[in-house]
Image 1: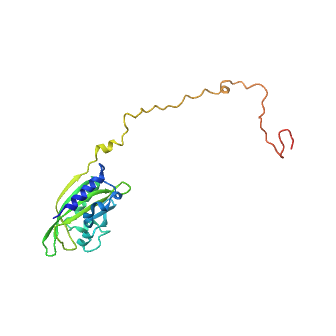
Image 2: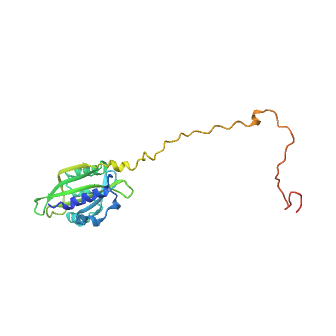
Image 3: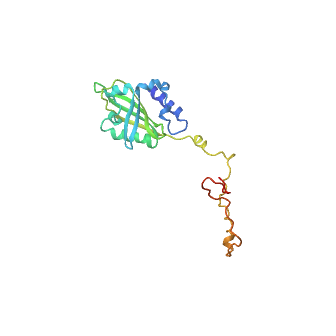
Length: 221
């Protein structure tokens, strides 16, 4: 069984990740993994416990004998394997993790054919982990619709690069200590409140008054 497409896709995914938990969906360039395009699929989480196939290459459609877009990924597996694939997909998005599955399923004569599936976490364009980038390869022609059984699984948790996180911290050479902030002292009370005696002397009129009839302050029009 040729697994070069799986290896190339994982290497490309790692190059996009750059120390993050997962790359963005919008960062994928199909020209960089042309060998895997026919075997590729993308799952989208539409609810916390539910994923659907959003995109799928021709090989996956041929394995099922129908267009698979919109189908749950569990449809590719037999009844015994469905709880297992559900748990593996949950690990991809919640740990997150890279999951490699060894599978088998019958060919048209009923003989078991080996297959391998790669599941990689992928972020939406908003940055949330709600996508799974997957790829599958088989050792021969399988009977459609396929019903895979899981024979082995490898789960590798994704780790962020500490150096990537360090770039988001303030550089100590340019950092300044925070200044304590306090309210300014209150102004002294008005002198009128300190002196209970009324203010003596004639009251001064305001220097502005309302004019009517288009007259100025001397009664002239």
